[in-house]
Image 1: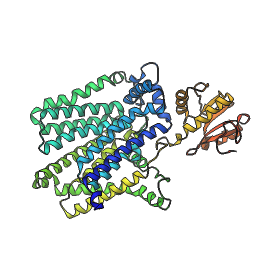
Image 2: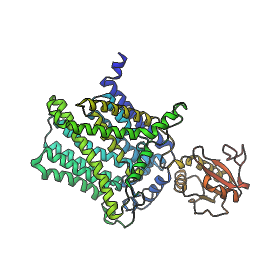
Image 3: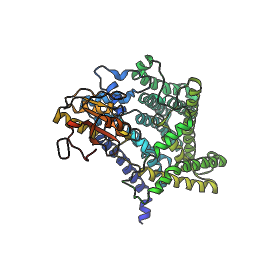
Length: 527
């Protein structure tokens, strides 16, 4: 009885809804608690926190993530300056992404053993999850990209199931997809290739469904997107300055490695029994390559068995769903492969660096969707059935691994800045108690600490300075201990704060340092 309840549709739906709500709540809590990192702070201070409307400006390295900058300016104006208000646009993007993925997983399969692991892999991937929180455009862009594909996919699924949907609804779906793709580009200019490719294939899918009205569909696919680009990033694109993209790599191998590494980064020792940690370390190395290999084998079975043809021999409803899965899988696969080839070609022709780490974030949901669709397509041979079960099992293992990588206080990209909040409390205390005004900050922490100063508004020192190498004679320094140990010793500085999670330290002149139990002393005593 209990097993039947757990595997029932209603229980699986309730579990998926619970996982969706928990993901959003967890992202909100992280947005509230985590210190604003240097990249987030710099983006806000350059494009969202200035007196003049700098959020419209171009930046050669795409540092101005325009949707995030616009939203941050709005919410900090309405709610006051804080890390949370700066991150509200990202949380809105997270809500769009989580809801879209929930709906997509419900459409892809009725089997809970596919729905739940696929949802977890798409939402709880720790690298994707980081950008539900970080005040950057990568997560927002991914949300709108997946949304553009999903809106079109919904129309085709319902039409295939003989729902009463006409050309007007197809036009609306195409127009919404166009606007979403443009918003994805506006959120993050590095999505230009993948967004354009996705829109072209969505248009081709729509034209196949309504071949007699191609010009109308073309207008629906072009005009909304152009309007969005004209209204938001249009001025910046017209006044674009020449300059190289610095966040990128020269080989696809480096792109792949950066995404795999970030996705598997750091199983959480607070969640995993030490006895099981060696298992997770093995999974960290092998589970994604194994899942990818199984997905490729399953794809070979699908092609060999010509599933899109055999499905016509089934019942009408199952036939329509299988055909839709094959079409959707073909679209997502084509978007992914073509985007990779386009980036490679752009590098060969123009030396435009290829995506790396966060600039290639959108590849993760696309590839994960491909794997989930391959697992959901019915098997028509014994070999395909065995491989399908193995692939579903691998998805379950990946989902469990991701859940045990959940983190609360740091990002993979900026883990070295996890202690910014606590460090600033020490600096502020010395300002209040000993009137320290002269503080120099290492480049790693410079923008984040200056944001803390602005958000607090209670300290009397001006903007923090920073030079490389450090200059001597300052009252206080905020340093990376591993790199600056010799400097600390040579200047006779006393460390008064050391990060719990990072080698970040606050060091002052020996005559200004508090001892244990005094004023601004922070655990523990340091030499």
